[in-house]
Amino acid sequence: MNILLLGSGGREHAFAWKIAQSPKTDKLFIASGNAGTRSTGENVTLNLSDFESIKDFVLKNDIQMVVVGPEAPLADGLGDFFANDEKLASIAFIGPRKKGALLESSKDFAKEFMQKHAIPTAAYQTFTPDTLQEGLQFLKTLQPPYVLKADGLAAGKGVVIPATLDEAKHELQAMLSGKFGTAGSKVVIEEFLKGIELSVFILTDGKDYLLLPEAKDYKRIGEGDTGPNTGGMGSVSPVPFADKNFMQKVEERIIKPTMSGLQKENIPYAGFIFFGLMNVDGDPYVIEYNVRMGDPETESVIPRVESDLVTLFEAVVQHEIANASIRIKPETAVSVMLVSGGYPDSYEKGKIMTGIEENDDVILFHAGTALNANNQVVTSGGRVIAVTALASTIEEALTKSYKKANEIKFDGVHFRKDIGREWRK
Ligand code: AMP
Ligand code: GLY
Image (cartoon, rainbow, N blue to C red; front, side, top):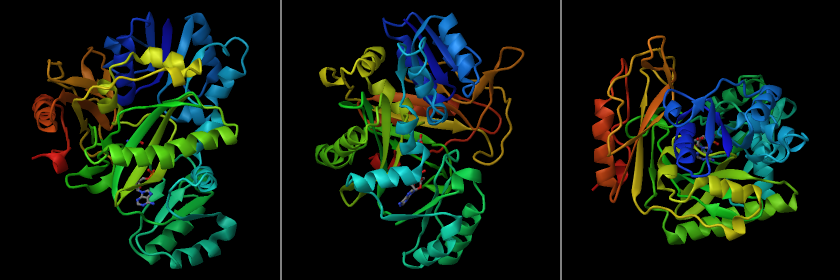
């Protein structure tokens, strides 16, 4: 079949790499892709908020499956657009409708959903400009640090964690006065959870689910988890502390109640759910839901999936997940992200990259890369390229990955040297 994959980052290159290996894939198109996805299919330029142009492309190219990487088109209702269009309704669409996407696009919706379905999460209250005074009072009842979240999508920047009450009050005022635009017209204030984070993923048809490999993401720019937050500087899968006992708690307390909650609320769901979890002394709590896979987690998770991804996607749209199974490689995957100098603040693009030939030890997933006028691969984003390696131990995987990371050169290149360090012997 012909498949259209939407998105252009490292996550999408990992999906494209896997989809291209499927015997069921005839033609793979990636919109808009990057310099790396070119080796897996055909990059095409589409505006993901122009649904009519996506429709034209899908019909002209006889697309039978659409896989959505990022959250924005889902939150904007691309899934509903397909479901409600006579010509598109029969096309396999991997991603939830707008209502399901609310799990990510509205923090307030997600918190209310968790409260209603008794899913463990930090205690919270939601405030609007009209209830600013109550919000300021509520902050006084909490212990520092304070967690303030803009309700809507804010490109990963909508969560602020001030250390003092004064800063928290100031921040609440700023957010409710439009610091994050309309995304901040409601603000969730919640209790700070102390623990270790991990990302758990399922693929679901709305009723049953398959558990994908879990992963740990390294969000801060600096070694030892210091400095500002980024989109993610690396990932490791599996996560050593996510043992059988812990994952059983995750399934019983979080995944199953989420599935039954979706059903009780008549929210159809076809696609991935990403549970951003905090392990608090052995008990899992939900920090956030995402309605897509994580980036850079996908770059470690997908190489561990042995099963054919297109077959699994078919099971999603045919509501056959109950009868499907997923084979996972036991190896450890690590992924080190190389980023542009200056990221996550401003950075320059267009830097020529060298050393990006793959070898047998690594898989390179491009994120922010493009071709320049001379057909050279150049940087085109903050996160540039992920170096993934699989091995029977985390040590060996890290050695392979870092060896290659050190060979990739571009002006200003930076990467964290301590991915997976907590589990190195
Ligand atoms: P989110 O966008 O909701 O994932 O939040 C961004 C980051 O803020 C998370 O990855 C956590 O590191 C942190 N965070 C969010 N909520 C909490 C919380 N309740 N307690 C502690 N840290 C949090
Ligand atoms: N790595 C975190 C995310 O994709 O949101």
